[in-house]
Image (cartoon, rainbow, N blue to C red):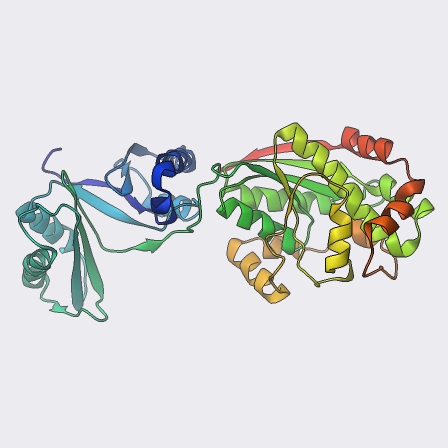
Length: 392
């Protein structure tokens, strides 16, 4: 490496570091996701120094744009706009002096970590030497409690990094390490948050949205597409199946006792979603159900509904309340889309009363009048697939 510094993004991971013998698998996926997130930016090679990743930036790289992308890559604990130099204390000092020359700050601290234990200076000695040089060059005072500027330094066997801001990453696991799931995406607040939380645990998410056309306008579809596109920034590419459900609901209304209809709708949705999951190689279904939030989401009804599918159903919001879910929806940017008024399929054909403690036997009896196979296949054959990518 030349004596000049190399600019780039220094990326730290946390949970991945605990994976033992499987760590290389997780790191390989994280590296692939970083390349995908920055594929249209002017970046250089991605390197793997011990315990971290370093994505080199070309001269024209926009740090603001790269920062935005990295903040959405699951698996990152924190990251920084860093400079890479040879592990030489005098070179480090000169490089840092050059970088702070245009900065204004009244106080500072130096935080050095020496991962290379045979480096001839301890972390404390690095702090003292660099601190003295910074103080002389800037006139600022040392403040270890609340500094205006912190100089972070990491010394490795063959290189050293320094930076001035540590940015928190989204955490979690890299998308792609935990398989594929199918998420039933409504136009509401809950299901987009459920999808986000599954992505954070390393899943690729395929979306399925049920709408009531031809008995409703396209607002519900458009919202679902917008929500899926917003969430795609976390997994880079998505598929959403738009399933017309209005005629299926008409069949249910014609034959099923009103208080069981919502549960029959949901069981049919699960059957349709299961067929899509098997087609797309997904291992589980995901819903935005929260225990007790509405009458159809009692523990008894949840148990009765899930009898309709043989795939596991994951409910990442089951223990969260509406306020917690809404807060996370606002954080990830789906809330403003979710509150746009629309004609969702469940509310359009919703009965006045819903049974709160149904059994599988009762629901099976209620839906026995329906020819379930053709209903499922008819909805599947009319489904529309939309594929999307991010950056769009």
